[in-house]
Image (cartoon, rainbow, N blue to C red; front, side, top):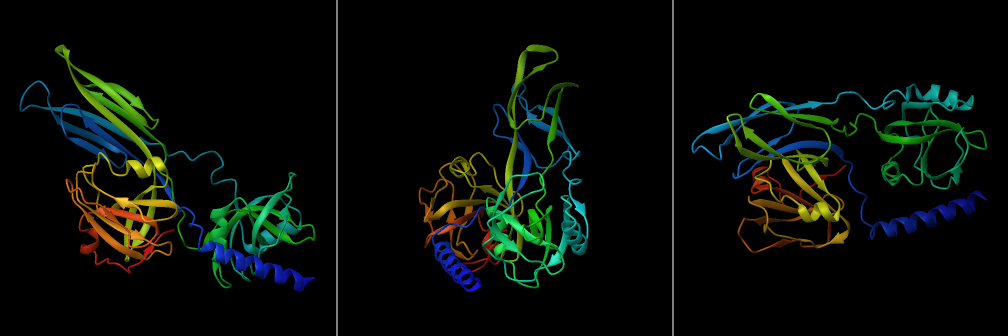
Length: 364
């Protein structure tokens, strides 16, 4: 029976390895970020606010030539954690987690341990203490703690778990349970290499806008807000301003050894919009495009107003080629081979940092 199971497992793994050459990698791990862009009507000037704080912005008056007007924008971060975000998992040792599982405790725990053996497939399902069943995609045996069961619908965790090797130290969080055979297990809702930081989402923002000494708007939902700002002594005269509060995903990359915070474009809408409307990028900022299948995408600067360097990247992080784009140039650039990722940086960034075709990009 064991021999048959081993043969089936080998066949399954072989098929998976073959499929892996055809199926695109999973989207990279990202964190939620926010920014606020202020557009002044009648002017090309715009201001981008990247972090909470109090900002006094100056813009050219639409009515008095050479005069500046001031708009005060106060951005506050909501520091309160969501209910139960950190409290629902109980910190413990691997041995304690194992013992509690044997005792039938169904608590949620968080512990670290070393991997005892290569990840296995073949667990049919798990039965949580509150009933029902959960299909299992991967099982990771730990040296001192319970067996870590990864649900079949958590493809992100399965990908990470499948990369584990015996001796790796991992941090696991999840709910304790016992298998039908009495084996202590933990149904994982999180797994990562110990010591690696989990992406942290930027908490919600509340934006307050003041004009001529009084508050004229306050909002916290991601959207565009158009304001008409009347002059105190000239009610018929008004300035126009648009404030765009954005929520977007950011991937923390390492490009040729350099850290880059790249906005993630992983949907048709975000890929089509790209960097339109931007005046530029901050230091070590970029945009990472992820495609659902390997393609040879074409990029141009039809709607971008600053030079770009474009790196085309294989699924293993290898840069295939790097193209250059200049505003107003009708030429486009494409990849030398089918790729899953494209990274846009400001023009000259790759040369300045010694990154060339063949360099590696670490994508979490």
